[in-house]
Image 1 (cartoon, rainbow, N blue to C red):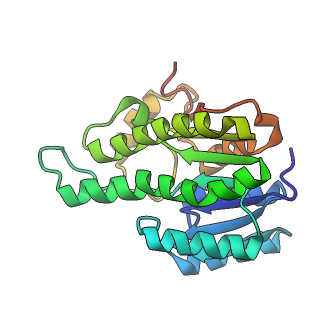
Image 2: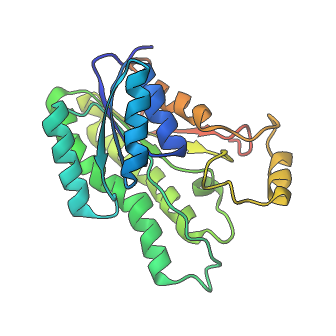
Length: 247
């Protein structure tokens, strides 16, 4: 499985799943454009990719800001010439029971997790249509499939990504562009590092494979969907959850 000659742009690439995806895609031969707010972490990631013999460029962006998204994609296209693979990974949480949830926290999560994916797809799709080849991969969540108390905003945003994935898949499938989603379960990242030991133990009881997932588990699924081997898969939600949710 090779991605040689492909250009991949990954949002939320400074840490966790996004960082693992960027490293995996680069290892498969893609040139990676890494995008996130933290410029220092992006610079470290670029250095790591290049130290391993890959190619990477950093594009600082807050994906919740439409103007910044447009500027970052213009810069990436200007520097790299095209975008073959788009990984919409950027995401945040603002957890609270719905009766206490502030409108600002609802809007913030929906803008960052869902609206940003629409904005990024809109900026990348022209390049894909022109070359009649593209891979769009949206990182959703198991909680977009089954819900989670205290995460109405997060679950809604991730469920929305699944609907967006299917709609885009239908729009551009005839142009040799696929659009799929990857739905991670309980993954060891900065976002989950604050969970209590009790929460972790209870979660493990519901994971048949008996372990918490890693960002690399998700990155492997993303790399597959980005490849030619997955050319007949589109509109699909690939669950990477250790069996926590089946069916």
